[in-house]
Image (cartoon, rainbow, N blue to C red; front, side, top):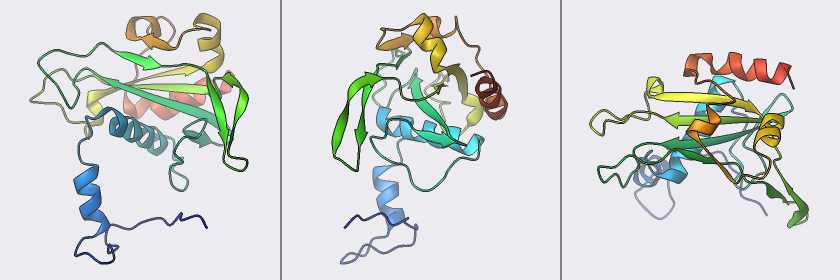
Length: 187
């Protein structure tokens, strides 16, 4: 039996005095951690294109299904949860991967980039006193067709910001839907 219930913040955790909101606050409040920032970036992109359909699927071959178009979302930031005074070098993972099939519990034989579009999300704020992942003005986004990644960077496992900027321009959050639609129209 698969447990796949959409939770509510008010749901009680049976046997405790805690709620799901307590759990979320405890475990998912620091949006500067790599894994949580990545999930949050997926949420931002999904919200921008109104594609928050159901709950997120962990380990899926792509992050968002947007009207049948598969979108992969990647994130990076200059300031991490463990910020030590030095800004992180900006890079995004673009390695080909094998697809996991939940029905068969097996991986595909061939590794590839499964999405048709990549959205690279950069939390660009460099001031540790001002950084706020909840402020979409502190983010910039780069939308790239996978065919362009495959053409310009076919074997690369990651892409640095300077290389990404050769094939895409930074856009604001309020421009994201338009740009994703534009890239999809040119697939």
